Length: 349
Image 1 (tube, one colour):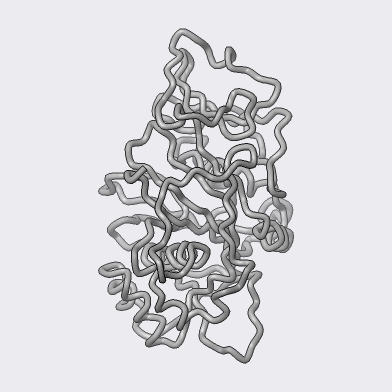
Image 2 (cartoon, one colour; image 1 turned 90 degrees about the vertical axis):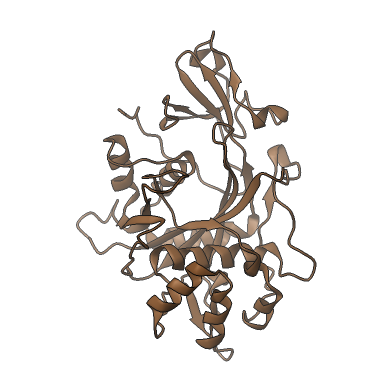
């Protein structure tokens, strides 16, 4: 499993400034377009995030982050049908901070590197923590610090020490855990965290990994994807459909805070190639099974997609380019208090 890489991502939401449609336009999501020079997913739109660095788990963080032993900061990942999650990445080294902290540090550091948004708080041990929402912290020489952290991740520790601040790990709510499907050579075990910021913040691409930043509603992003103006991979597509179910920033905040302590299910897509295209099975689907087959595409080129129909379906159809085409939910109930994704009609890609 050494070829797998550990990563963290932030689904960062803010209250919408456009109140013309209160029912569907109550919040926006920070969406980042990856640069065309990226070797992995060039020109795809993603949420901010990236791979872990050794400094993200440094024991120095215990001196920087107040209440770092907070038991609510979990990364409780459960495997298929309640079994232990499959370990694709190694544990933190002995003496390092636990994963529940280091993965959140990664997510916050990567968000700063990619967008310039610094999800940190000034140290003020006399005030109670408010973990519902997060804020962008303005500091002196923020552009210089951004370049320093991009150059060396350990400079994020220096940033916090010199500016008397710390990563607001308590405001990142565990949302989901996605594994890379077998069609892609580069493998990631990515934890997704939800963070909610009260007011929109100006975000800027770094000009290297990222080329564009936008705050969009789930409907806007999904519409652009259907029209072919944006490219989305399965986790982003699925999570946008899930967030589309919420019509209120406040309700989503309350849901995320309460649900995250329950943990989440490890999502390991199983891919079947058929006459009609690719079928991706997700945990809970009647045809899903947790076996060694998850590491390779199953070729059933003599069969059609409908040949794999089941009484319980939790799956997606994909195009030849492996872009999500259709999500199918039937008799499936998400685990650990999570919410079902909305259903869209076939995407005309």
